Amino acid sequence: MGPSASNRSPLSRRSFLRTAALGPLSVGALAACGQPAAQNPGASPARAVVEITYDTWYQVVTDPIVPLFEKFEQEKRIKVRMDLSTGNRKMDRYTAWYVADTAPDVVNGDNFSWSKFYNSGVILDLGEYVKRDKINLQRDYALMGSEVWCGKTYAMPFDADPRAVFYNKSMLKKAGAPDPWDDLKGQWTLDDMLKIATMTTQDAGGDISRGQWGVLMDYRGMSEAMGMFVWTFGGTWADFQKMQYTLDSRESLEAHQYVEDWVKVKKVVFPHQLGSDLSKIGKGSAFSLGKTAMWVRAAASQSAIVKDSGGSFEWDVAPFPGRKKGQPGVTIVSGNPHTVSKSTKHAEASYEFAKWLAGDDVQGLWAKEKVVLPTLKRYQAEFTKDPKRHLNVYADAYKVPYGIHFRHDNLVKHYGDYSKAMTEVYEPSRGVSDALKEVNQRLNQEVQSGPCAPYKGMQVPIKP
Image (cartoon, rainbow, N blue to C red; front, side, top):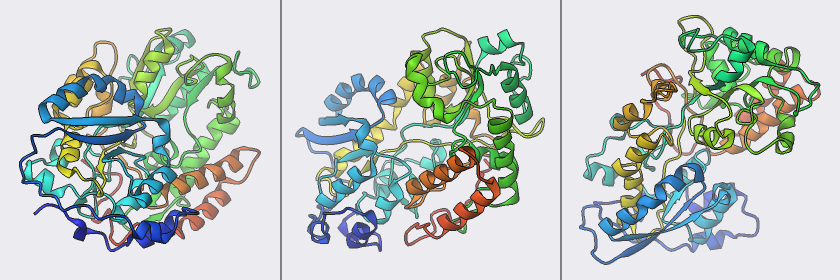
């Protein structure tokens, strides 16, 4: 039998509303939401054209595949009405959809937010569908960590988005700095990275038009950069089994102090407060505009680099460096899978579209056009074939220990709380040890993950 309304999580919709802080929306409005009709994934698709709604924020990877929609629509007799807007990534928008029972059929949402909706019973469990179609997500896809949540398949993979280090080969060559590949053969360390950053930094007193920095990274980001440093230092910033942060651990403190020295003493990191000044010199990131030698960022950013740099410099990509020679760094992997709303009246058609986005047409195009690393593993080898750049770095991230985001119901808030605490460390100044102890204690009081242990049996960093 297919999924039905009776498969809801123990968390009620009433509980979901209480935790979602929806203001004027009433409990009654949520309780009155209509129940979706039971669906049978074993049934044959209807021959009449079915229209489904699809909301996404992810323009950089969606634009290239839109021309393929016509083929899907003709073959499946499913019309896709898409809403592409950056506003589709906002938490309050999702909550309003599910409260008012107006959610789109298929959603590419903010992957940090979704556990709250999984736990609230408003997302369709696709387990029977993928079982019927003999799809093995764990074997065939590079996953980002919450497609399967508490034993249920709530999302279909879409893209693979590991972090790596983009670097400006032209700038390194001009500065006489060692190249991570040409000179270090990809076996580089954090100290090598610091050396390159030091050699390429040109202090101009904070004048963005004349200055140049070694590294662009989110040094106020709990997972984007700092989490990777903590793992690479041999520690953890979260215990996925106990569902607790460990930001105040010895290794975490050492890693934070190491990066603090880069930012405050050596001043080789692009100051985040100068981000608002980028528009004075052009459009794009500080790296794309030629203001930094390196950028610790996600694989999907390569499309923006190509577009925004306009070919003004030669660039390549290297793995996140290790702490010692011969020891790989620990990066974080992510992705942006698709969910099907449980309120959909077209469960079969919605699943077919989410499956198609994870299938050969889309993943094959990404591999051929080098848009983003395909999540479907059999296309990753084709993607990595590039005579100019080491795109294998992305696929290789899954071959060594790697991390995932510590997802739970309050993750988005906690990323913001941590960033605020780190801002206080850097502007003007607060002891990093005290900041980590305080924020760790406070955040651990707010971790909520629903009625189960979502990472039961999983050790992070994940060892392939």
